Image (cartoon, rainbow, N blue to C red; front, side, top):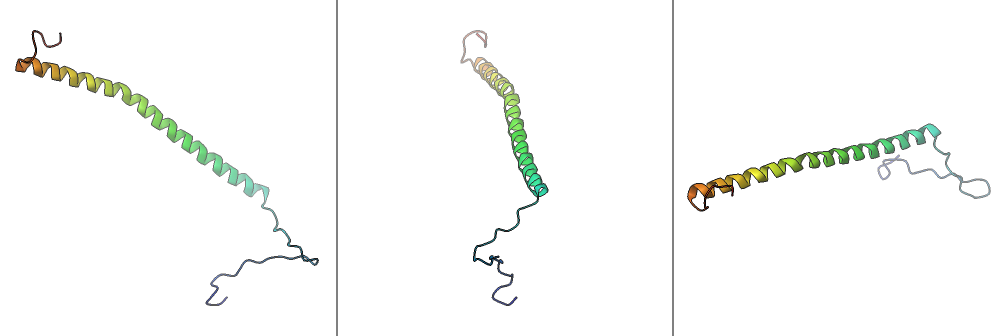
Length: 90
């Protein structure tokens, strides 16, 4: 190694007839672990999406209740200020 090449360049294997030789394939266990990591990542993304969807579904009734309380408060305030006629929730 020298100053211009801090790492060794890749090695290319060439056969006696001049053809490039393929590097040896990866071990089956390496491929299995690689696929297991991909499956785990996809499962984690699906679980995260399901959690977000569940949270959104839980918040829908909360939003409706907040809107109902805001409307009732507004109607009560209009009645107290004399802006409404009769009972406030008619």
